[in-house]
Length: 550
Image 1 (cartoon, rainbow, N blue to C red):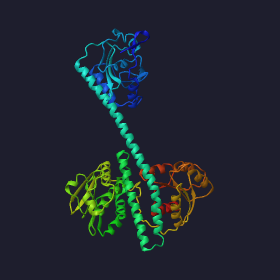
Image 2: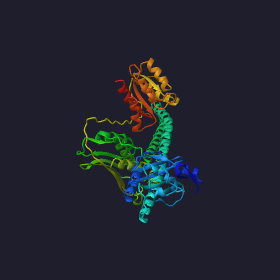
Image 3: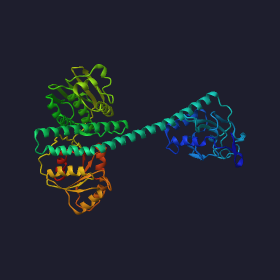
């Protein structure tokens, strides 16, 4: 190895033959100038105590410097490369042991020897990547000469160096996984948005047609279109939900909830599906369950949807589906759904909660459709809520799905009303209101305007947020339906600007194809008053307009 002689009598190793590749390997790890991490600090502290030295470093050697990922016993974050002992440690794969720096021609004039921290002893193990590039070293430093290093101490330092390198590479691998999951989640969210937007047109047009004069055959066709659209929406929602699970971005929104009202409303929402098969469809809620619970009502309804939906789907006509809520213990709520359906074979019970698993025998018998994600999502939600989930079944006899959730009693104070709507038809309401519809997609403009006109509203259209601002300054509107994603100016920015205007402020309703609680929170935080997700439900539009025009 060749050296470069420096002033004051010390040497610096010449750049390695593979220096460009070595530096690229270091940069690819994306660790330089990163925040301190306890996992690395614990290692340098342990090295300092085990080897009985005042200084221990995880040093990464850059082009012109050495930077310390962890620094024990030294108040510094980096030094120049030319005075770096660790640059010497990269030369060979074995340990660099400098027993007395003043007696070593490579270091006797080094400014870190003649000045602070007055290095005399240095012991460094190179940090080598899995593809063979030395990127730095784990080192122990003392201010006095030491010749008494034992094999056990060398083995200890070498083991810790391997641990440091493992930590560095695992850290980078974890970042890549998170980035990949985030990209996948963003892709699914974008895909969902792009699909839900035209689906709003399909379901909206079907709803409008259902309320015109149709013969029986036309009515049958419209019902097929609407039913297929709703099934597609269900599949899209499940795929997006599972993408959020994989990227670990689902968050609970616990609040004081009237549990009976929430469960009753959702039970009723699914009642029409049970009626179509003449099922004995019942709900019982134990008297000892507190009136208000601190829980996420949306996730409770999602669990119910999957349990009840599967029970109805896999139960033949004239069968039974029973839903019950009981208090298993003072701090446990049990939600149970049992049915007299086709049941599940014993060997299939172990896979029932796994993603993409569909029991083929059940699917063939019932001609069921779906993603196979529903129960996997349900299991994740139950565990996220701190609960457990289970199933009992006899093939050909029926199944019983249950989950136990933490029961935390709350009160009516600050309880948020939870209301479901199941009316697909335009409600016979005459709402006289001046509406500004801010929407850039022509199909959505036509559908939403038609719905609002049928409800008795006068509607003007703005194709983006900038036009909307001009209109609200020159006209008085009772409500503004504000799409969130538009060219020129989106709904979030437009709403913030409108709220700063010295005008009689309109009631602003968010319109978005993003349908999660965090999306609603973002809309409300920007100054919007209410939230509607696409595809739009007519009954929800009516409810919000009644609130806006009250």
